[in-house]
Image (cartoon, rainbow, N blue to C red; front, side, top):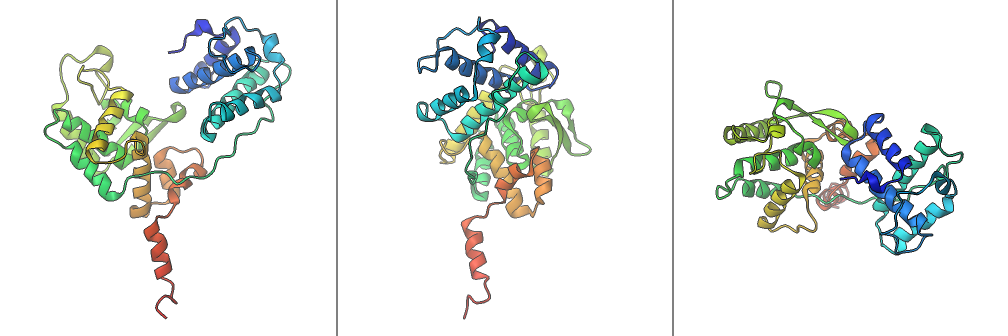
Length: 320
């Protein structure tokens, strides 16, 4: 929840612009607010470490106009050295700062110079995504079916959608029953950046959803959750945290490291399994996952040790 009273007016205007004009998702706007608030507190404190309690509500545009790229570099350096922030975290904050100053300079025309114009993003090393093997994925699905769990139909459907469709947590939580087209085996989800996309459902997904709908509560559903596909025990739209807890429990029962695997790693798993076993075209995978850039999807084109070994063994000189 954003406390707008703690923000200076120009920051709230920036948030409003992103909500009303750019149609950014609530999560994105919340991240922008968090990143910019901390940056401005750092600047207001004269770049000292103990800046968390600094009041920026009365901060003026004149103070912002004095910010230079060296000040931004100082903040990013503080994140790296004092807070040991990961490059991905610093990259997100750099992006937020760049968008913020671009709004003040280009859109609102509240400042004459943009100190973030030439701000570079920290270099990110390419990492192979963590994912479950095919056998581990099957085990997780078996655990989700556990009849001792009174919500097993719901939890199995959730796990099935994650592992088959590669959808994001927010996308799954936001599904409404009206989003599903059973005759064409597809559903519409609202993805990153508030963009709508179509996800096609295989037989396993359709069966799991239908089995859950048979036991899904029919009465006493909270008014604002009547269309929600997945409901909590309080008969309201299931929350992100509840879904995370469900998957965490399944991972623990499967004997998998919860520090290594998470809900988002199930998205990685779905993408990797489709690429490795399904001979899926990289462009089709990009469309399925809702990636804007093909370079984001390319992290799933990694090869595992078995593939590397097979490549060596297939060398025509191997048996000489």
